[in-house]
Image 1 (cartoon, rainbow, N blue to C red):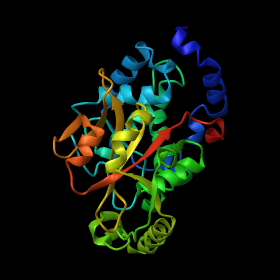
Image 2: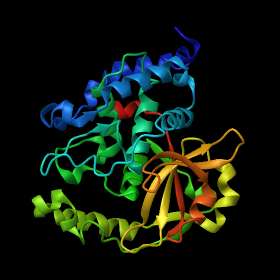
Image 3: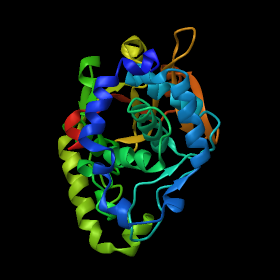
Length: 307
């Protein structure tokens, strides 16, 4: 057994004994869309997972695992709407051949968690189960569009309540912001599932009203240079926008280069691919619409997540 794997062997055995990973597969996975539709790029997935295991990434802290997988995904084309697979059936999905800003970080996060669970091979269904755990309310896809966590603020609150992430923004000197959200509930015709099933709209209005009242804590971009030293590889950096109707417009990962510069690793619309971009604070200053950031630190899977 490789040293990197043995360091976490006890945790792995306990997790597999509790779950066999199959225990967190949802009804949507079992009876929803076929695997060939919900998992694109299985060969690339297997190659990257093998590469990560062979390189000893399983023994690294989670943030380093996430950062390494995200860096390995550089050059992957930027493709939007990869989650919108059906008008009525919602299902966990993975696309290794094209991703947007959100699916980049959640893909890297799921791979970072998976590589530490056991040696190869790793199955697409295991990957989908970890995506489900992260992407859906209470970690369960019901097969309906409204079970997906569509807003980063909603995702943060839900995942933090289950011990999967930690919002470190208050410790960075963040300030409060409240805004009236009306993105999805106010513009349902922009979303194919809401057009297909208007009965879902009231639930999105309720969710956005709740998020408006809860508010967020963020670091204004003028203060980001002084807090960059406190960020770690693999931290999830949510870009707060000046736009009205929503809090955030983009998301990526903190990634420190060989010179120690904290850079923004993301799936970029401008570059049309996954890139390691400029220093984070410089990146923010390049866009007038960027108001600041909040930062979420991913955590290793708690055992209770598997029960």
